Image (cartoon, rainbow, N blue to C red; front, side, top):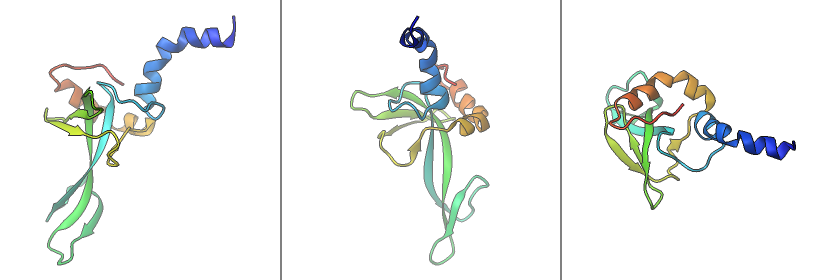
Amino acid sequence: MSYQTILDSLRPTLHPLWTQSLGVFSTQWRAGDWAIYRKSKRSTHPGRRAVEVKANRKGETYAYVVDKFWVVDEVLDDGTIVLRTARGKLHSISPDDRNLVRPSLWSRLRWTERFSAVQMNSPNPVSAG
């Protein structure tokens, strides 16, 4: 049996691993994929998850970024990705949005509970991860 034959027989088993668990090896988004969206915010009191906190000019408010843990609900025909939040809201995002990233293996392990919470609140739970 050749190496290619063995690889072809394992491909159905490995495909979910490459596209969902590691994420970085797949360029296509699919329903159930986990995504991190880096959302820019402004307020007088940044939360504990705020990163890149910068005071605005007059010092009354702060600009910062918060990582949002969302799950792909569907991919539209034009390539737009519909993402579901933990509270069930839907956001349509372009796949080339620089704030949209696939979670690394470390992020997936660290934030499994956050992604699982989004999937549990989904009306059509898709198994990913």
